[in-house]
Amino acid sequence: MRPRWKLAAHVPAALLFSLAHVSGFVALRKLVYGLEGARYAFGPILPNFGYEFSRDAVSYALFVGAFTLVEDLLRRRCLIETSGPTLVSTTGRTRTFDIRDGARLARVRLDQVLAIRSAGNYFEVVLADRRKLLMRSPLSAIERELGPCGFLRTHRSWLVNAGQVTSLKPVGSGDYTVELGDVAVPLSRRFPQALARLRSE
Image 1: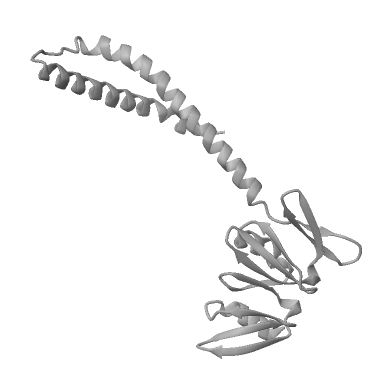
Image 2: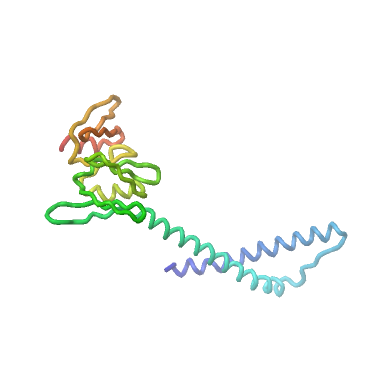
């Protein structure tokens, strides 16, 4: 629900909308009349403007309603498209990771996820069995979901499962390569906390 003060702000906004509309058509009519050698008179300001405002207020309300509807539809679509994965607890301490691609659902164990890479509007999950699965969501949402589970951001486009890292190799200028078995992931010097965390593992 919108705060009342925001709703009240539509009153002066509607007045400005009507004033702009009336001023515009009066100026246009004066120009057209002037080109024909005539003179246009708007008449008494208050009664005529009151009449025009009553019509413009309806138009303004329709515009606001349409924009609000479009905004709500876009927000709902965004929530659907960027809804993050869910961690599902199973027996013991095993956790599974649900990866949704449209109507398709792939459920994998978190300890089988080696790394996650940003791929445009999607992210790609790299599994220990060399499979790669896609899901539509920003990497930042996945980082928030999986950060508490030991996943670290090592690069603007990569998350790694700290528990699956097998080695760190310096590549110069403060950057490293993170190896997770036969999978190599970059570790940028811009993520020193990830480096410190992996060194302490």
